[in-house]
Image (cartoon, rainbow, N blue to C red; front, side, top):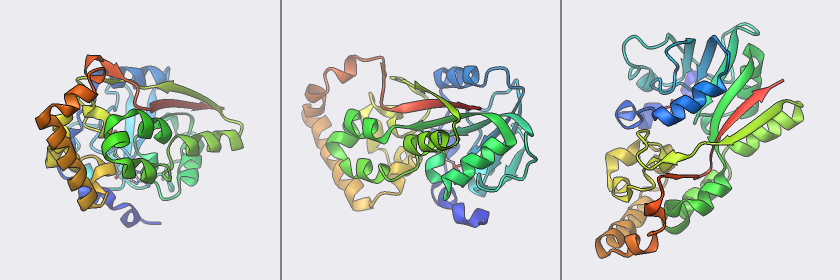
Amino acid sequence: MTTADNAIYDAIGSGYANNRIADRRWAQQIHEALGAARSVLNVGAGSGSYEPDDLRVVALEPSRKMIVQRPMGSAPVVQGVAEYLPFRDGAFDAGLAILTTHHWLDPERGLAELCRVSHRQVVVTWDPDWFATRFWLIRDYLPQVGELERTLPTLDAVTDFCAARSLQLDVQPLLVPADCTDGFFGGYWRRPHAYLDEDIRASMSGLALLDEGIVERAMQALRTDLETGAWQRRYSDVVQLMQADLGYRLLQISR
Ligand SMILES: C[S@@+](CC[C@H](N)C(=O)[O-])C[C@H]1O[C@@H](n2cnc3c(N)ncnc32)[C@H](O)[C@@H]1O
């Protein structure tokens, strides 16, 4: 496998760093999960969100388009894929993989590589069943995303991987604040107008990779519901919330 096999973000990654700004509440939870680690390998690092600046971090990322968006002074980055990590056994205290395993061509191999180079891993992914049934945008406007996501290596893939190797797995919810600064798919759950913005949608692979016609029709339905007030009436309970559990999960893997 070469980095060319993982070129999705070379196609959809422009503008990622502008829309995907690390949320400080997620950053704190991720930092706490890293515990006493002093050195961290951040795999699928993208533009560098959630890399703790008080730890020794090395980033690994396949897409050049993402690498060039890393801010000046951020951690050193190696171009590569999770499935073939160019580091010796036990080179890091912890591995970090945030919203990336669903893109890996061979997630089992990628996770095995992470476990080879570090004894503890912190992985952020999501429960696609929860996401499809609790997030209004998927449940009521874009069920096609839910169907697609059930096939992706997310929570179940990591759970199965750990069970097969008798690794310890701790799973915690990562609640999404109403004013989340990270523009991942669920990040705008209480700001529905944001989903009508093409630039914002472009940084959400779940939407960017879906058939354009399906997304257009769903966005038209959302636009109409927002204009008529139907959305506001239907989701009057949602707009009261300050944070929501959309199924994002923080996983800690250890031996
Ligand atoms: C949604 S982005 C997440 C980036 C970053 N972790 C963040 O939280 O903003 C997913 C990243 O995974 C990377 N990726 C895709 N396939 C990969 C692979 N096989 N190994 C490592 N990273 C991969 C993509 O290029 C992309 O940068």
